[in-house]
Image 1: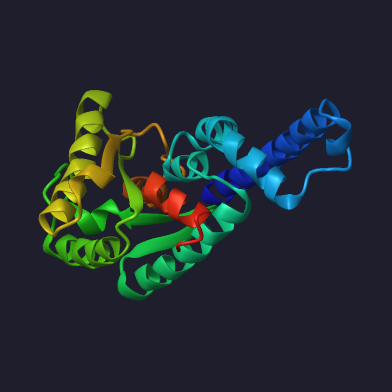
Image 2: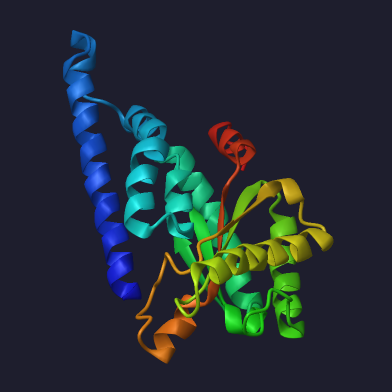
Length: 237
């Protein structure tokens, strides 16, 4: 199910890029004669960047269920600026992959998605971080502090065991617990946003124990802040 979900995300990205390219061509044809020779790469990148947050982000949010991948794609700027941001994210992702032993680190678009199995972070029906979780989040926080020009969305997810009345606040408290501990280690709290989705965003089959275990997770989206985007535009990264 996870692979199929990733495929839907990538297909939606390609579809939106095709839409944006068509929009660029239409705008180009409506312009002056001097514009009819075609957009240069910088201009085209700027158009894609301006539209990607609203258009691509909206579509990815619906397809991916507003998960971390959707947040990252929605914050993308595209073009040459996006390429610069991507290279900086490559370096940060390499450090996270090296340091985090119990998390999946993925490069998505112009950002990074980190997924923790909630069984590592929390005991059943608990939002209190376990000792091993504190070790992992400490490593995560060290990298986040080295790259202060990123925003962070922390999302809690549960399986479908139990009622929404139980799982919704539990997912919210778990995301909050990760953010609070990262903040206690020096990560600027204003960079972090928390969300809980209960069992609305499954990545695996909830009818099996293995699937439910995958669905009990915390996802973290790391993407460029406005300050990073401006610095990239100025060539300062």
